[in-house]
Image (cartoon, rainbow, N blue to C red; front, top):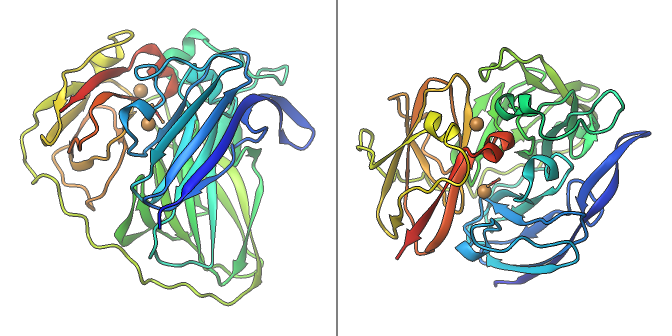
Length: 407
Ligand code: C2O
Ligand code: CU
Ligand code: CU
């Protein structure tokens, strides 16, 4: 049975105590950072009344949700919501998965200040875990005065904005708990402006059970996973032994700006052992490939040209029902997380190699000096859409394009 999920979101300034005794002026929804968790089941309708009490205009985008174009929350489809105004978003959620909502106006500042939250769509028969946690990763760049470092620093245009304060669910390096012997489902979102997180749990093995938009039919064992800004990943975490203390960390990664330092996001403390009731039933069927390996692209997106193209680029329209095979070519010296609004795509090859698993994504890392081929099918949601680099400073600089889906 489909339900109506009604939510009031008030965007306003909030004293954000990101660590005990340390606060800055953040932007939060309903006074919270991250904003309230919105939960629904596939087929439900979400109705959000947004009220803007910020000192600047805003918009809310539903990252990864296959909304109608008018509800996408970009300035291509609606007027910005001015201070004091309200706007009603209303859309159905067709797919189960881990999504997030975030500001789509002056994002470099508004998202850095905390204007984002999780949106969870829970499928009917999914594998059950002992417990679930939503883990939103982020960072903060503060100046020596302890306030947010000023926005618009020209150095950030290319390098992006990365800070030394690492946040997990809006708090600096917090402690999470897990019971010994139990296995949890972690829904991970990278909400940072720029920071790439090569996530590790102190080197312990975990299973990757889902990507941006879906659960995988076969989980993959790993000890690390790269989560770029905008991406989500779902993990099965545990079991661990009572008394273990495990670091939730970002390993060094070179996205083209030199190798980053190891970064701690938080600690996982393993409590008393409890019985486990994990069941692997409800694992979804394998995803059919949209396009065979070697399918020729019908569009090439040159990320270098995009990066230097300036604001408000337009790309050619695509037609409902016509398979899109796009080559994302990155000849720049750094990685870029490519994000497509409103539609899922499949990676069909990266540097000529097929991906380890066929899955749905809405954000994919295109490594420096590399090429990723994606396939996607515009379903019947005509209107104005866009794609962009999810390094927010790159997006702001114009590393984006609008295009139409036409009937
Ligand atoms: Cu998270 Cu325009 O996107
Ligand atoms: Cu998006
Ligand atoms: Cu970029």
